[in-house]
Image (cartoon, rainbow, N blue to C red; front, side, top):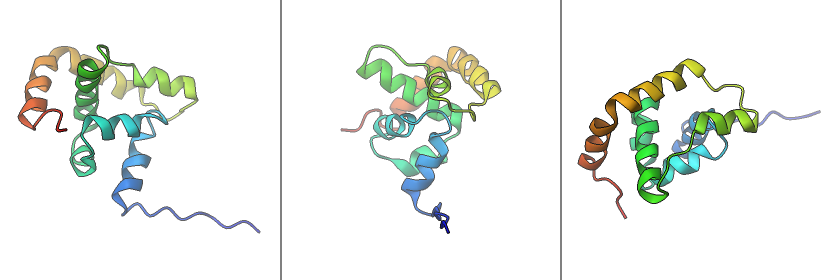
Length: 111
């Protein structure tokens, strides 16, 4: 007889992981890094805002931003929302500088 594992979504660390693992198994870690460990801030932002901040953080630290939706598909993630991804790409293109300003207004990379 197998027991079902209960997931406590009230734990912010677990809720963060569950939400962002829909994109890629490595994405929750990147979100945590981009937000400087601020899980509550990341959870309060929309998926589009999080994607823009992660992309900005990657540009600053790596010199290029990764396509997390493609990474997730390569990993076999079936929950990648293609419409959301297309919207995110359009939003990032149209709002790149706006998102960058918002990112820095929030404190940018707090180390």
